[in-house]
Length: 169
Length: 87
Image (tube, rainbow over all chains, first blue to last red; front, top):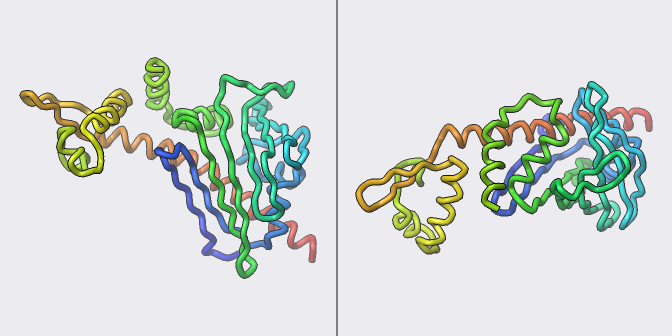
């Protein structure tokens, strides 16, 4: 494996967006498959000890991936990713929402727009992801929902911030 | 700027292509979030950055970064396994 694979993570608060860039030592078609085929996705999507469980994935425009992040204790947190645009094998876009186990979107929780770009150079594939939120506070909620048990975080301050923000609006 | 010294909204606005009103609005939100603190000196209010709070945000963002790092490290392994299988 190459030791100099790029990893870049930036947060643009003005754009309410997170940008993640990463290179992989694999060709474009393989990396594309890893992001777009549920049997591969489930092998890496959830950081251990969490697991990813995709109930179904219909990879076409207007189709959905309905999946859960499963905690080590077996608790399931369901999400829906709707594919809003697909240009094989260079780009696809997702509208990401939280859901219940019966595939109903939770409209009280934040949604985010994902834009994933894929490009290959000399056998190395670069993936650039942008995740745009409607509000900065949504970022915090996203982490809280997906990884509540898996990561020990000091979120006290951000809880205060959320309270402050919600009181204002 | 306000990490280096406490400043008034007017002084801050002079450094940007913006109005004092706009700067004050941003500062009000940052104050509510406890990221900046106010200090009244005579008729003027000076604002300065709460460095510790900023560090907390950094720490929090770092957790988010780690999620992606862990996720992608796993993907590296999956990709290398698939490549071996193909050979």
